Length: 376
Ligand code: GN1
Ligand code: MG
Image (cartoon, rainbow, N blue to C red; front, side):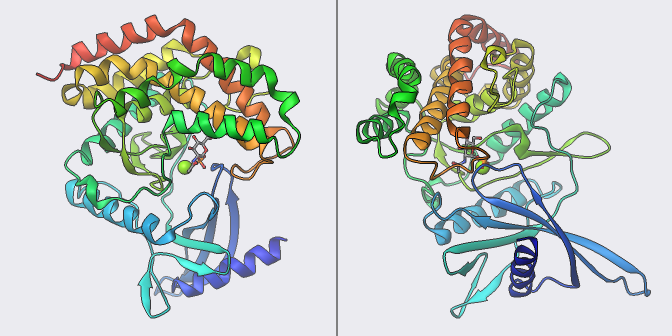
């Protein structure tokens, strides 16, 4: 297996003209959708000494991302914009290959799509109780949002249509529960029952947007804190990664998804759901960092729905995990037969706790927003 992957990575490296000789690789286990490998090369540094350099090679999940052309076009435009806006900051750098007479930032190889970018030595966090780091992550996502505030959204494609349309996610779940293609429905009645019982509140953001009450911005849409790279020594945030879902969206989804992941007492797939819940200290630190960058640009409706957006997106994720369980784990990578069900249960436990603490969460948001200035 390893040899097969090594051979594939070698071929991909050649197609992207990576300099030097391939000597090792390791899989980076962070993502739930794409496969990511750190690939190491060695070359002569010009003085006869060996210099090593690394690249990130990714196999894109073509079930999730149906059109690599629009995916990479979005990412290249967005990174170009950020590079112009913030020339002193590190930015993602993609390699190109020639295929079918065209220069492209991806390689099609039968069913598989590959891309390559420079490896940035950094530290990432899946779980972190240091409020200083969490605040920095909030600032980094806030800065990312602001760097794209003047980006023309009409240049972007929807890489995954209706990605954060919570209503449509619910409709899909209900359809798949009715069809029950894998005979798993009887196992998930309680989870489904809870999600349906909070459907209206969970879909509130989507409904407000459809009613013209919330602004469309260019957003990241996948703001797990492990998508912020931190400097290994200084601990400063370096760059926001994973730009596959940068699309027109709602700021609440960026805020809410980051909170869902970072402020949960447990990992997002903890089996012991009794510990899942929102840590208000972490919530405060993230909210404060994020709002320190964005508060003056937010409309009142945006500020007023930030706390609720955490609950909505947590329910949305629960519907996605539960739905994937019902249809036989087609979308998310799973480590065990019940992985998606475990994830859904953990998100439900978190959503229940958020629901109880919504007033406190909202008070925290309002106090930070006031400190950094509401939009005039
Ligand atoms: C996926 O692959 P990763 O971890 O970056 C998913 C997100 C989910 C997340 C849950 C394109 O992100 O929407 O929130 O898993 N990305 C996509 O862990 O569906
Ligand atoms: Mg992602």
